[in-house]
Image 1 (cartoon, helix red, strand yellow):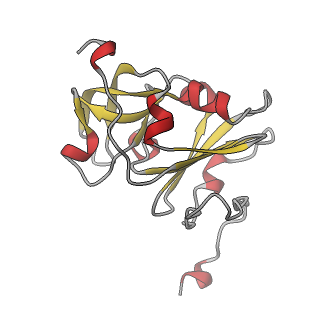
Image 2 (cartoon, rainbow, N blue to C red; image 1 turned 90 degrees about the vertical axis):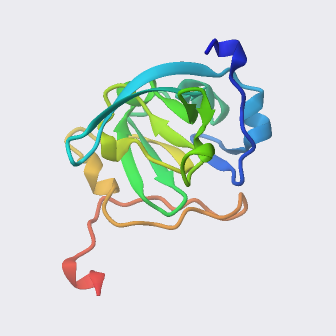
Image 3 (cartoon, helix red, strand yellow; image 1 turned 135 degrees about the vertical axis):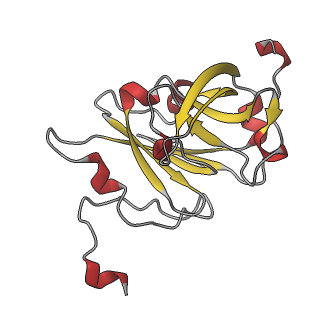
Length: 176
């Protein structure tokens, strides 16, 4: 499928982009951005490998809308149900906010409408049902996986504050 044949499907929810500014994108605003196709292999936790042709909005295009600071080292990608993945910016910049694969909208064949995909991102970091993408600056030696521990609720509306994740992991006693 040629890039000119790609289309943005309607989306049932918006996506928050958090950098120096916070903005929200929906299907209408995504339609004004360029769409690209990329072949990405996803390696699941089971070891199964899937190579698909994904199409969507390049992550770099989205980051420009939120004025991401140049010192950004990672992106925190949060799903609608609060699942989080902290992805190195070098990997994320080659990624897509995928809206479809193999020429069809994601929602046609799955229970999610968007997915973060990037060459070099392992399966657990290819977040489904993206609700937020947040620029982060980690200190040298800081563990990005610490930002993935626990699950948070994605803000429901633009007026809700964006929570700032902490590197403190919940204790096993907190899980009760």
